[in-house]
Structures are given as structure tokens and as C-alpha cells.
Image (cartoon, rainbow, N blue to C red; front, side, top):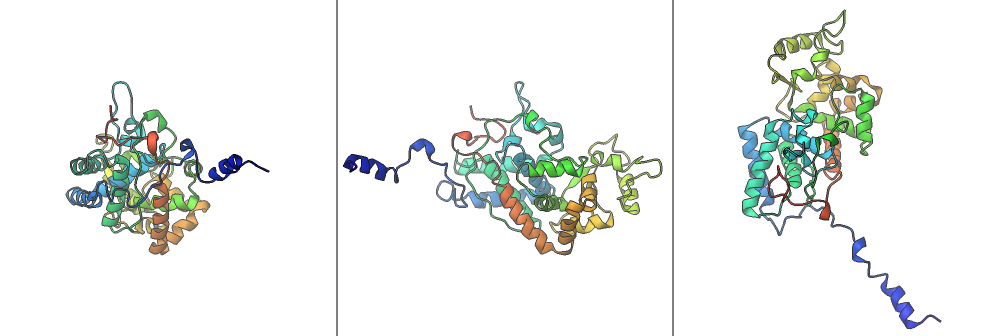
Length: 329
């Protein structure tokens, strides 16, 4: 017969677990309810005012959020400024074209939040909520953003290489980048719908616009009138690298499904846009979202909620930065 002490030890083990095995607290929608009750209102005021004064803010913030999350998770590592001792993510070649409005809206929100509740709200949470608020402000769908992310403790430009899709990449490579992070082809297409707002620099698609082949000035996937208009708009891109064109020329200031409607008509801007419609793995989803905006919005909600918790940091994996562009000392 087992001793009373042995039975007690076995029984008690059902109720007590060592502290080292306890999981970190999960993210929650009411994370700041007690520690920073004005969090949502401050974010709403900041994003609204910034978007009104700078209409490119929504697309800039959405792109900033994506570039942050796909490199080691949603942890605000893309906000860190480089130092003489470290070249940070934001100075990787692909991130040099990130518009300043995305960074600026985060700085404004962080400044206001530090006055209201110092040292409480992470920069990673600010980017996630700002992106959601701005999508909604542009006519897009509301989706839930859970809170409680910590900010990264590292940021290196070398970590970016090969981890973000480029418009010139073949579709196989783009799909692989998404699948390696657990995102299906359908989710990749839904996220591409973010191109319904924002713009791209002429240099990003110039190779398909000028001297494409011996028989064609532009890639045959372009609508001929559209390619001529693009060549006119981008004529001086070598002298002026800031020249850019709206990703969705039909309704550039509205978050809708027009981006998908444009692709079958040859009105895509980037090589990757045209590839979405020509590749049999993605074409069906393009057709679905072009015909049914509700289907696109539902898919976008699901993938943004999934993306926003990708690789988040908690506990000692991160910190709450005092400034979003620098690690705490």
C-alpha cells in the first residue's frame, strides 16, 4: 500500500506546475483596459487626424505592418533606426521605399500614449491597431486585433534578405515565402488585395514597361492603352526616382475589390500583379474576389487576424520601448 506522503505528492502534482513551464499570457482584446484605458481612443484620434492630413498614410502603414511581421514576427523591429554599430531592418534595400507616413503615424501615437500611460503600450501593438483603423477608414472591413505584443530586442538589415516578396520574383518564390510562414496560396492572394490602395514607384515595374522585347515595348499582359499611359507617367523615372503610380488606378482611395477586377483587364501594375492572374494556382481566387467583394473582405479579415499574431514576442523575449525607433538602454 502506498504511503500517505507518496499519494499526496502524486495528487498535488495534478494542481501545481513548476514556474518555468508556465506559458506566457495570451494576447487579448482588452489587454490595456486597466493599464491604459484611453488606448483605443488615442489610436483612433491619431490615425484619423494623420490620414486626413496625409491621405497616403493608410497604404503606408499597412505596408509597414506587413514588412514588420514577415521578418521575425510582428514586433516593431522595422521601426528601429540604424546606428554606427548596426544596420537595422528599415535600411535594408527593400525597406528604403517604405513611405514616411507609416513611421510618422506610429511616432505620433506613441508620443500621445507615453503622455497618457508611460511605458505601457508597445510599438508593435500600435502598428497593428493603426493598420486596422486605417483600413477601416478607407472603406475596408473591421477585424479584431488582439493586444499584448512586446517590442523586439534586435533589428538587422541582413534578416530581411529573401524574407519579403518582391514584385519581380517568380510566383513560385513568392508562394514559398508565404508557405514557409504557414500562409496558404489563398491567404497570399487575399493579402495581395491590399494593393487596392497605395502606389508603387516607376522603377519597380520599369523592366516590364520599356524595351520589354524586340517586338513589344511593354509586357503583353498590360492593356495597351494602360501601358502607354504608364510610359508617359513614368517617362522621367531615371531622373526622378520618386515618380510613382497608384496600384489601383480605378479607385485608388477606396479599400475595395477593384484591384482584383483590374487584373483580368490588364490593368495590373507590377509583374507580381499580372502573375496572380496568369498562374493557375492563384487565378481562381482572383476571379472569386473580383466577382464577390464580400468574399474578399471575409478572406482579408481572416488573414489579417492571423498575420497580426505571427511571431509575436512576449515576456522576456521583448520589451516596451520608450521610443519606437530605439531600444531601451
